[in-house]
Image (cartoon, rainbow, N blue to C red; front, side, top):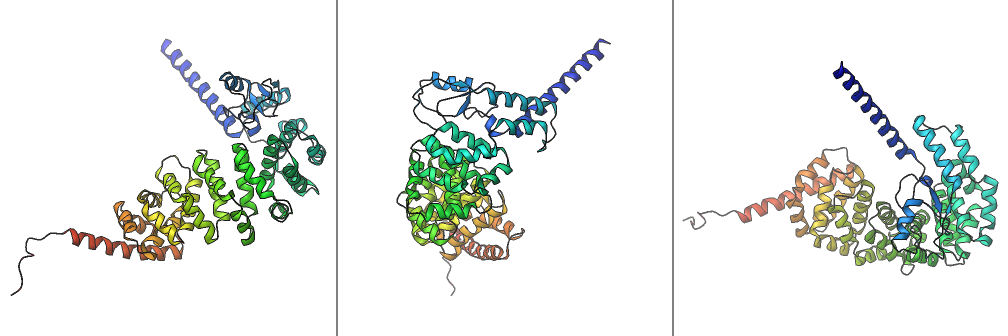
Length: 436
C-alpha cells in the first residue's frame, strides 16, 4: 500500500508539473509584447515607467540603474531623473491576462471579457485621433507610447489610424517637427506597424519622398542616433516606400543612408535588425551604382559570415542569399564573392537546407560564378564541399524550370572541371614509353 501511495503521489506531481509547464509555455507564446519587459523580455510582475515613458519590470530596471547606467535601455537617452512611477493600470491588465490565460488556455475571441477589459483600459479611437492631432504641441514620449500600444492592440485599431483623414499625414509631420528622440522613436514604430494596411505605403511614399522637406536626412539621423527598435522601423519604412525605380534611386543616392542600412546588418546581432536591413538593401539597391556601393562596403564578407555561422534564422539566410544573388549580377560583385571561399562554401552548404527560396537564389549565385564568369577559383571552392551532389539534389527537387536549367549547366561545368583535376593529378609510371 505504501508503494501504491508513493506511486500515486509521484504521478500527481508529474501531472501538476506538466500542466504548469503547459500553461507557462502557452503564456509565453501568446502574451502581448506590451506586457513584456524590454530588458528581460519576460512578463512584467511589477511594471514601472521612467520619465521617457517606457515601462520596465521593477527588478530589471533597478538592476540596470544599480550598474551605474544613466540612460533609458530602450531609447539609450540620458535620463534627467532616475525616478520611476508604478504603472498600476498595466499591472492590473497583466494580472488579469495571466489569470485568464492560465485558467482558460483556449484562444481569446475578440468579444471575450479579457479583450473588452484591455480595450477599455487603453485609449479609445477618438482619444487616439485627438492624440495624433495634438502630439506635435505636446511632444511627450508618454503620449506617443500610448499610441504605439493602441495600434499594437488590434487590427481594427491599425485600420482606424491608417484610414483616418489625418492619421498618416500628421504622424509624418510629427517626424519633421519633433525635437524629442523618444517621440520620434515611437512615431516610427506606429508608422511601421500600420504600413501593411491598404494605401499606407503609397501615402508614405508621397509624404516622405515627394515633399519639399528632406525627410531622408531625418531617416539618416534616426539611424545614427535612434534606438535599435527605431532603426529597425526606419529600415522597414524605407523598404515599404521603395516601390519604383525613382524612389529606389532617391533612397540609395541619399548621402550616407545606404551605408547606415548596411551597418545595421553588419554591426547588429539581433536577427530582426539584420533581416530588416537586408530586406531594405534588396528593395533599394536595384541600380548598378547602389550594388557597386554595397560591394565596396563589404556586403559579401558580411553575408559570408551569416551563411557560415550556425545561429542565423531562416528569414535572415533567405535575405542574405538574395543580396548575394543581386550583387552577383555585377562583375565586381562576382569578383568579391570569388575571393571569399567561405562565402561560396556557405552558399553550397545552405542548398536544400533552409528553404526553396534560399536554394534558388543560391543556385543563381553559383551559376553566375561558375558558368557565366567561368571563375576557376569559384569552381574549385564548390567542388571542395561536394557541390555537384548538392546541385544534382536541387535539380531533382521541385524547383523552377529556370533554376533546373542552371543546375544542368553547373553539373556540366563542374564535372568537366573535376575530371580535368583528376587527370592532372594522375601520375603514371609508363609515361616514358614512346610508341615506336
